[in-house]
Image (tube, rainbow, N blue to C red):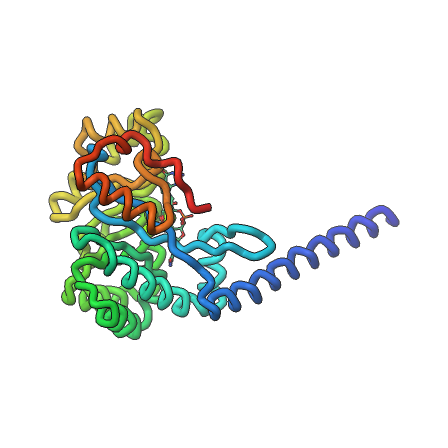
Length: 289
Ligand code: C2E
Ligand code: MG
Ligand code: MG
Ligand code: MG
């Protein structure tokens, strides 16, 4: 009895600790977003040869003063839950537009929108305003949306995306192949690109059926006039399979480049565009936490 009681007390204490750690994180997150403390890392998207960079995905980074780097995979869902994701999106849009405006004009920037962003038409004005203020052509901005981001009101999301696309932006479906009923989105949304999820690629060289699936998705996407971005390519073996099967228009993965600070990204893109091939093999070693 007594021992059980002690255990219960311990359990309760650890629950309390977890609870307050989470509460604290929420408080800090709200403050970090309010003070615009997040930064952006840029991960290049390459041609399949790895010789040229087409653009970069902007990835949010939060360096917590005491806890160190916190993954966006943790704080983005938290910000969504707290109803403050649109404030973060606003910062990302603004920063990415400002940054991209300073790059060579053949490079695009791609940003992630979350479910909440696609449920509110205000995002259209937020983006238009950021383009305007930074004098950036809409054609240089790409928007990534996930299937889970579309689960809510598909019709609202569709109409918002159509409008943004009509302004000149390109729309990519992100993490493709991880959700269900994926295929139906391909012709329901005004898409330009499909980003095939890393989970497809990680098992590509072990599981022969994964290659069949990949080839099928690629074929279908191309039939629909969509470009293919393959995400999460890490090894030479994976790269070879993807190239041999002509499965990618663009490759985004550690094999060619990790997310990096803007300066490093621009330098890499510029070097490659000059045809200096020295750094092609593995410009990867830079990672902004
Ligand atoms: P995502 O949009 O699918 O971004 C790609 C993620 O895969 C990034 O993780 C990137 O670092 C990682 N990645 C890229 N290549 C490789 C590879 O070869 N191997 C492995 N193992 N990983 C690779 P990150 O930066 O941690 O971002 C995680 C997710 O957080 C993103 O997934 C996106 O859903 C979300 N996120 C990041 N920034 C933002 C943002 O500004 N707004 C919103 N709404 N979501 C964001
Ligand atoms: Mg993305
Ligand atoms: Mg992705
Ligand atoms: Mg993802």
